[in-house]
Image (cartoon, helix red, strand yellow):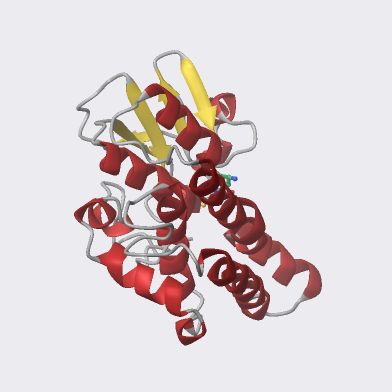
Length: 236
Ligand SMILES: N[C@@H](CCC(=O)N[C@@H](CS)C(=O)NCC(=O)O)C(=O)O
């Protein structure tokens, strides 16, 4: 891509057909990196440095006019938004399914992912918190903690009768893909007291031990760099 703001191609380049535009610390990007790892799909990683405003470059705007990562380019198909990308991957790449066939479990997975995707993360994303502080002059962390607490309380209730080793039983599915980065962010960035959420706490321990989760973590991405002042290691 030709641009004054270079979208850095930092990936392994093992599959030119699939390109993921990602920022190492983006929890939304992490969902897709995790799903790709679990499915064993190789992809090319293109870094979009949100701290430098690369999401506003003209070429990235052509991929996603909303200026958010992640974006997946799959041959000539451009998919933005982690929920849409996840479903695209699930439909096209059928190996290691991340959605169960059972209608009740499938609905539960869609619901849990949707709560994280629409009911928690958008309310505390970095730009929202920054805008809140600018407009109201108030510290935004308590708001973030409130929204996460509310979402996590609902998730505990929803998962109570289903959770096993993973969120909806003994198999890792979509719910886990969306929960894992969100719980990590809650713990590492927002200091959420996880003792109130025993199921999510237990799942977090399981996720941390998974090689696919570790491989998709911010620290293991090619654009994770210590000279970046925002690169504290916690997802945004
Ligand atoms: N619903 C979108 C949300 C994407 C999103 O919030 N991305 C954040 C990073 S996690 C972003 O790109 N922020 C850039 C900005 O706020 O300028 C998704 O699930 O992909």
